[in-house]
Image (cartoon, rainbow, N blue to C red; front, side, top):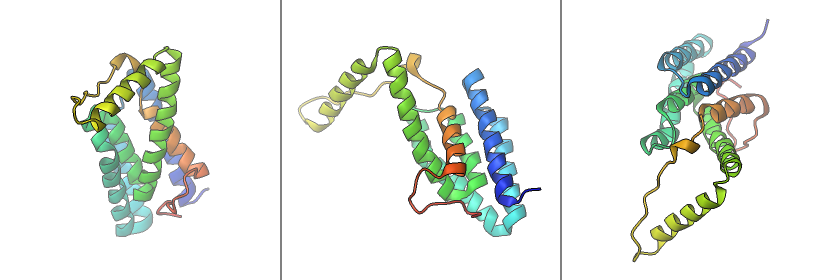
Length: 182
């Protein structure tokens, strides 16, 4: 038999693997899956820690929304990815949400660079980024809009899942943040 921490770690790992598989197979993480994972996380937190656990889980959900919601609003990631991180926040609390959000952006960035290199589009991307940044900093230039090439998108649930598992077992980011149950 294992304790609270091991149960939560294993649950996060299973949820993350299932979400990553959904995202790879169907290019989306289903609402029903995310809702079930979130409700289960809230329930488990309440069971182990009472009202304070429920409060911590709710803050994890809200932190994830705040950290990743803007990326959805700008069209950089899908709504299922945000809801997936929100569900993970229900399991780990707000500090866990922050760590996973930061790491998933870094892991996703590495994946993006690898995709751009493999499709021979990295130099093109750098030129567009340079032109965009130049248009922001030189007032005489018209600001170029950022555009998303949907042929180069990746399932962002995979970097979130990798980051979620990485954070619970190895704590790669040391900002004084940890799990609410440790």
